[in-house]
Amino acid sequence: MAYGWYGGSVQQSGLSEADFSRLINAVWAPIDAAVVFVFLDPHADDANNSDAVASGYRALMRRHSDVAVAVPDLPVDQVHAFIIEELVARGLTPRA
Image (cartoon, rainbow, N blue to C red; front, top):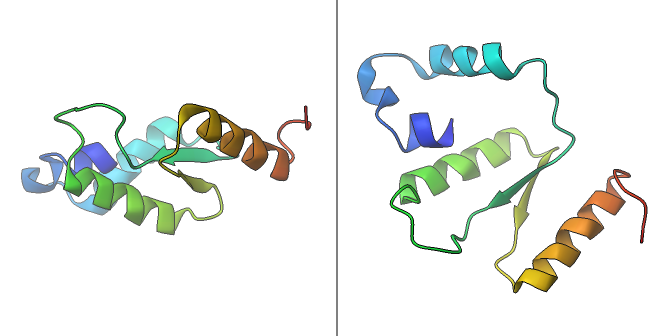
């Protein structure tokens, strides 16, 4: 959704956001995420990392605030610790 609708050309194709969302849901509906980690700060240059895509991710995070978690821009070891703590807090993994 972030790349196709917010950062891509689907919006200009004439397909509505609701229809595009229904197409995505038709594919992913059987999968129910317990948590989605969102990295808003790119770790490397990538032409696909646009302001529009980041804006899309933020909108999706607001819409799915129960499962979406923004990962802070930290050194790798601290990101690892952050993710593990979030998994533990959600009861998805035991504390090591």
